[in-house]
Length: 138
Ligand SMILES: [Zn+2]
Image 1 (cartoon, rainbow, N blue to C red):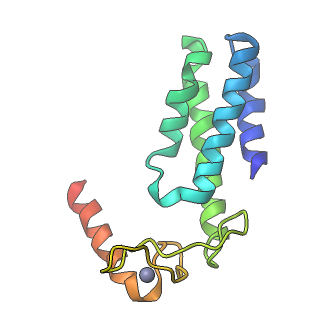
Image 2 (image 1 turned 180 degrees about the vertical axis):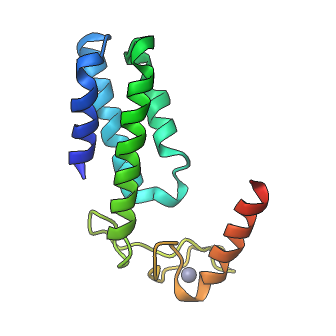
């Protein structure tokens, strides 16, 4: 997974203008974004935009468009790869995933999610209502 964050860093590092601290910050932010994407992708809204916002201060104005393009492309590729890897009830680090639903008693559902939407078979209806919410919000 860290190939992705190193890839982002490698492509962008010649354009960093904030010195050694800037290099460290860009690498660390990229690693954190990928890690969060890998473990928490259902709750990580707009990962590319959030990483871009975090690191853009380390680049000059004329490099911003390139920085955004690199971040967007790498994060999209990573998200696709992670979605594929997390369909068998484990995250990319091998940790067991739990269903995203909360039970009537208020604790989280302990069953394994059955597919990429992150819900177990008995909570699939929540994924459907979520899609409807997103569609009506758009
Ligand atoms: Zn469930």
